[in-house]
Each structure stands twice: as C-alpha cells, then as structure tokens.
Image (tube, rainbow, N blue to C red):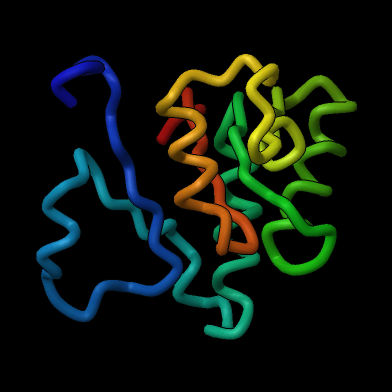
Length: 130
C-alpha cells in the first residue's frame, strides 16, 4: 500500500465468513459472490475460480503443475484468452530457479520462491465490475 497506494486489495472468499476474522482487516474489500451459497461446499472453490475469470480483464497466475484446480482454472483462462476476453500471464511458466537471465527483479524472484511449494495460486487485477 505504501509503494502502490492506488491499488486495491480484494479478497474473494469461497465460504461465508462465520464471524469477523482478523486477517480480513488487511483488505480493501472482501467479496462473497452472490449465489455461491447455493453451490455445494465441495464445488465452492471451482465456482469461485470461474467467477474470478468472468470478472477479470487480466490474470496473473502462478501454476507449476498441469493437474489440480489451479491448473484447470488456468486452462479455462487460456480458453478465454484465445477468445480475446482475458490477458493471461502464468509466472509458473516464466520463472525458472537460478536463472539470472530471466529478467526478474528481486520482488518477482522472491514471490516465486515463496510460492515454490504451492501447487498454484492466482492474483487477478483490473476487475470488471467488482
């Protein structure tokens, strides 16, 4: 926030918060999408991922594997990209460990290192209407 005060940090949640959680205070906005309460809990995260893709112009992903929910969401995002509805960047494909020629600054490399054990994650920006 200090370095980029014009950016807004929005947390999308797949399950309704049972009560106010302290970690929610770090966000400018917390969204529990309307209608998600009708989705069985087992399918809430894939439904939330579809919602995110529908509401975004850009997707910055960190997906290293070709299986799992993050990989499926990336596959769906690539389909939208081919249709001209989304711009997708997957840092998992671009970042390589110990590759000084990859053009990354220290912040991007540190993000890669922090996510190394994760199967995937998403950061979406410039949302359409949320």
